[in-house]
Length: 213
Length: 213
Image (tube, rainbow over all chains, first blue to last red; front, side):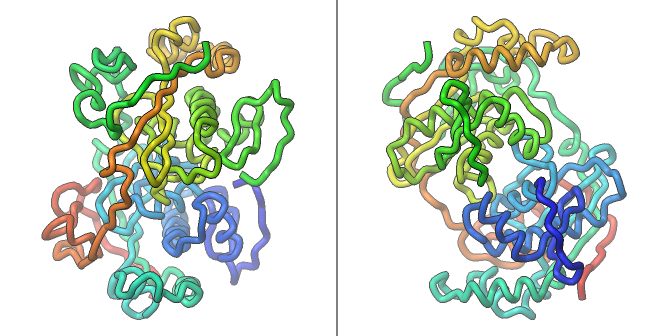
């Protein structure tokens, strides 16, 4: 994020890791540019990141965890230096709408999560989050208004320590060529690459088409 | 990506899904802003995305696959509307430096991958990719020069069809409250959430600290 919008303090929705403040409306633009559409979960996610960032010691080098692949990873990627591709953000498919930021060196940090009992006080958020009515009947304008009004009051935070096997950087180790596809893969995966070992997401490719020369 | 840089056609390194062209230097700025540092794998990743994009039919609504969590997901997130958080990008831990873009509706698309035998013609790329020398001895300037010079000549492309179980949108289904942590989780995960079922990335949280009111 390189822009430096000016937001009156009463209107601040969230900050990024550099301290730049965004109003709800300004962050809507960030979401739309990156995520494609203003998903309600990303506004909540931004508030979660904002809380977690504020809880870290100044100058802390941190990594991130998202406990769901839905929406939250993008709030983290938009507001912090942690991305999926640089490995500072790890996404776990735990199905909980929760995220954590933690000190790279000692694993200590803060976890922020949605509180079901707090959500219950906000009819449209509760209905959206628990899918209590069909999407077509959802009042998105009202939902976003409630999210903005509720702010951090639907969230809880707890201190956590990340397990060393998660926080330690694990090398992929030596590479070799897979006897199946001929491509490079981490030898620690076994005698062939995982794709040739049955985990390929593709049906057998129809044909090869080299490009370049 | 909202900027519209002007790049002479001989200097174009890659395009994003909207057709905006980026030179090698311009894309270096995109990488640094999002990924934190100009990782060599991201320049190659951008060329891979560029090739895959060019192979799709005009107007095709597509999803993306990255076969590694290293670098490549960020090239896809920078150049296409597909992100981890919106679910249009799926990351598989297959350990292959390869990615695919495919039609959402029929699963047909293009997979682009690094060719080991083509890499062998480029000493610094080969040495970096196969970790043939310690990182401290790596000549990053020469490596990036070779990557720019090699362009798509280290890549191969093949047509693929993605398995329906990957390309079909799978609903998380009904949610309930976990009897362990009290948080919401997808009931199809079982009698308790996966974190309470032993997959938590945290040691037991030291204390709870509610925020908001």
